[in-house]
Structures are given as C-alpha cells and as structure tokens.
Image (tube, rainbow, N blue to C red; front, side, top):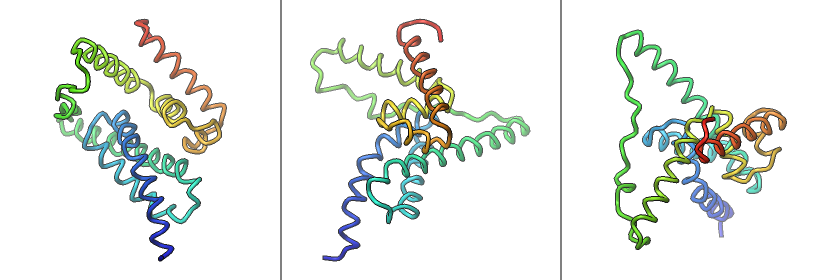
Length: 184
C-alpha cells in the first residue's frame, strides 16, 4: 500500500472532525454564514498545504492557529471595505440570512415547548458569544469548546498564557452574567 494514501486517511478524518467547529467559530467571528464557510475552507486548504506532513498530534493546534490567522485577516479586510464603503456613502449589509435547515421542525423532540426553550437558550448563548470581544471569544472557544490547554491556546492565539487566562476569565464572567440575566 502506498504510504501517501496511508497518510491521507488520518488527515481526512481530522479535517472531517474539525470542519463543523471551525465553521461555527468562523461564524461567531464573522456573523455571516457564507464568509464563515469560506474562512473554514481556506483554513483547511492552507493547513493541508503547510502542515499535512507534520505529526498528527500537532495538527489540531496548528489548524486552529491557521483558522485564527484567516479570521484576523478577514477582520482587517472587512475594516478596510467598511471604510471604503463609508467614504462612498454606502452601507454594508451584515445580516446573516436565516439558515433554512435551522427553520425545520425538530422531529427528534416530541415536546415543542422543550425544543423551543432549547432553541432560545442556544440562541442566547450564541448571541452572547458573538458579543464578546474577539480575543475573549477566541480564548473561550479554544479553551471551553476545543478543550485546549493553556499552552496550546496561547500558541494558537499568539499571546502569553497569562493573557489567555485573562481573556478566558473575562469571557466566562461576561457569559455567566448574560446567561443569568445580568448586564455584563
């Protein structure tokens, strides 16, 4: 069997494992489904091009470092685009159209009120995460969602471990307050 093919299988499994979370992280950052899809795809392509030959145990941290870089580049481009549009006297529409799949009824849940409550809670959490400053959002998603340790998160974010602790703590405090109904 060709060793190149042996290496593709774990790489494909890894990418399949991270693609959904990468998309969601990009969607939190951009608030736009199409932009998030593009960013997640660009991150995957760039990751494969640059790091596929690296040991598999390094992939997750390297992938999220690439994704963070793509998101930061997107924010820079968006800032420039907004300035140009403002100079031209036009506004940019950032509203994310409702996802048709999200509008489908939940057939797994026989109790509509329970499903509605879960949907409202999920939406409140998503809005709270989106409202976080970008660095707090990154720290929270990498630590809580991706379960990265402090050192890995610091590497991905390109900052010190102390900075990660600060951003993460502030994010958790803000999210807890928002979800408990207190003002941040």
